[in-house]
Image 1: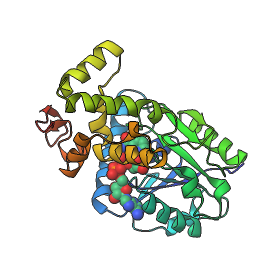
Image 2: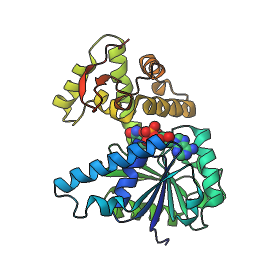
Image 3: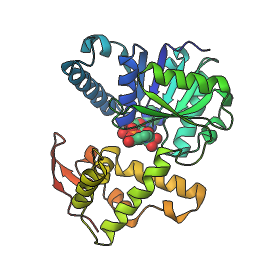
Length: 298
Ligand SMILES: NC(=O)c1ccc[n+]([C@@H]2O[C@H](COP(=O)([O-])OP(=O)(O)OC[C@H]3O[C@@H](n4cnc5c(N)ncnc54)[C@H](O)[C@@H]3O)[C@@H](O)[C@H]2O)c1
């Protein structure tokens, strides 16, 4: 078995920063790469804030400095991949971009290094296919917010070896999460496959004027015991992320169930991507506090 000590996370957005954080909390040496200095600065700030909150709640015993000291932000530099035992890719949900990143990592990473993708819905096998180590590629699908959510889907691509699958499972446990094993690389894996259709249905209800975003969220919280409504979750995840995930499942299956509703497409075109842009299904102030519903419903 590969002894994983050093992890390179590519993409320091919502997911990459959360993944870097939980790896550093578990004692791993982490490099966090991005093409944007702003994204890296934001990620370091958010991680440090989140670690502080965990310490205040008594859930972490190490100091912020100790944990942050394990994370090195790197801008536009893939060379450190040569020191990694595990790479976790968390760039935008675009097949060509992910394939380009996978090709570069494959060239630079040491032969034992495992390459994982955090894709929401892209076929892991299509990423494995552009490498010369397809047996060492798998999906590690984290959920948002990463420091809070306890499950991680471990996805077996058509080419993933038994050993890589086992290492992925063991790695997930080592960072204090529960692995959910996905034995076949199908579009949407398990959780999105179940959750996304209800998300689409909720959007269609709003589109048809049947109910408001707020009432649907309230109903889901109060009637189904969810901690957050569908639209509240959608704003945290990012409307662009949901749109790209739906489109990529639709392109694979050609099943109209997965076709993104027009309301979602328009919101994405308007740049209403959720909390990260200050407006999605709801509007937020600069500190991320929710002010009220967005008035652009239809
Ligand atoms: N948002 C969610 O809740 C969620 C949940 C599970 C999986 N995912 C998946 O995780 C991935 C990332 O999602 P996110 O929400 O963190 O996106 P995000 O937009 O917050 O962050 C993506 C980051 O990737 C960086 N990036 C783009 N090209 C790059 C490159 N070539 N090299 C290095 N960095 C690059 C961007 O600058 C950005 O900071 C996507 O595949 C998404 O589908 C997202």
